[in-house]
Image 1: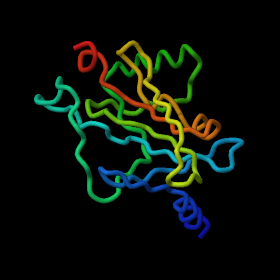
Image 2: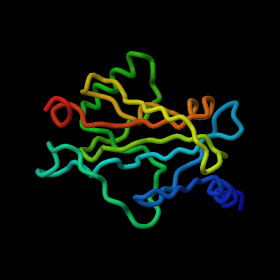
Image 3: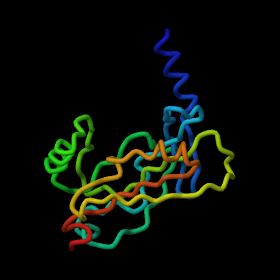
Image 4: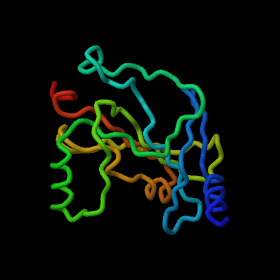
Length: 170
């Protein structure tokens, strides 16, 4: 019985937003020292998946809308890169407990963090974070914008982009 109650209670915090492309269901993230917490919308597409011969090396195309509610609670797949190199780098800097998502050419996604319990029409500053990595490695999933969103009362947008030969180096 308690497991069912926890599931229902957690679902009450699941935020849902409606955009011109469709609806998104995110997740509530607790932030230490902040009672209100953050709403996270993970893996939000900003372009059509760049897969297949017609789109692989083309400029990003506008994303198509979707019907129903899109699940935005999971980290997106990361862009094509040497995953072992990423693991080795994190090990060298002492980050041992990080989950790196799988790799895919379908990787043009945003992770968006917003302060919870804000009025729907609240006008907040927006910070866009473009990860580093020398155009050869990195992803939005490697960063967590929840603390910045909660403590600075700002919307944090983390963007992923194509890397290496499929991205800037083509």
